[in-house]
Figure (tube, helix red, strand yellow):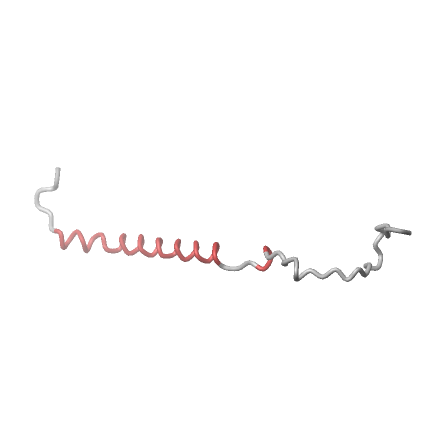
Length: 69
């Protein structure tokens, strides 16, 4: 059932802060979603195979056996 003597303009004014807060929260969540999903993270970047070059040089201090010796 509906309330008998409602003043729509007054109710709109009463609910305006709550609706503004909900709108701000929704916009903040959309912004957070975009930042955390689409922003590039350099720590997660994997170099492409063409970027990795094998020079065949050994790093000083390694103990890996050299094939053929």
